[in-house]
Amino acid sequence: MAGLLVVAIVAVVGVFLYREKQARDAAPPSLAPPAASSTAAAGVAADVPRHPIDNPAGASTAALPSLGQSDEAVLAALLALSGDGALKSLLRPEAIVSRMVATIDALPRHTIGMNVLPLRTPTGTFQVQTDDGMLVESSRNFARYDTYMYVADRVSPQAAAAWYKRNYPLFQQAYRDLGTGGYFNDRLVEVIDHLLEAPELKGALQLLPEKDGYTYANPAYEQLSAGQKFMVRVGPVNEAKLKEKLRALREAVADGATSVETHPVR
Image (cartoon, rainbow, N blue to C red):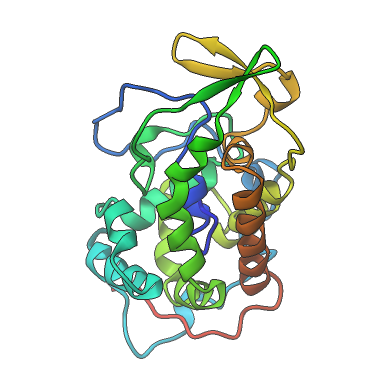
């Protein structure tokens, strides 16, 4: 995603892998990750968040729906944030929060399960062209992301962060359901920082054809995480826009952003 606002950026970033796969896994979502997040693996105390959101047990005038019954309310809120129906055409309407959490958690890894993505993948096929005798990505590919970037542009990071913090108990529950320790907001900030470290290209990168698509000829780029490869792949203009959104989102959800009302899950 994303580029996220919680959905319009970070979840968007998590939609794509570098290699184009023709087959899509139609199985029900399997949201358990192959390994604990690096936050948990680093031994961070589960009861001491580094970027705290108000204690979910502390408040409340209006209870949140349970995680399993939250899709209708979450979809309505996200559509209101984006202001029109563009997001609805992209979003998978089932297990929205759980898909978002699983995708965000997986962005620093090398692969993301297609069956946990919260958004539909772009239409069309990946296109290449020849430049000085080598294969490179065609600039025509960038147009495949226009709808995603349109949604990202329309959503205010501050408004998305306010909605996220009000609904934080749902995100925390989904994160715990992955089998990880610690706090989801810590992981979100960690992942945003990881995406912001994605390289910014000044020219085209050579591609090598493989059975299922293409790989980068430069090993340093081929070894990037799925999230950082996406940041590179969308092109320098879109990458700069996504990073601007990510910085604003990080500021809104990181240190000191705790003076918000939260509600218990019913």
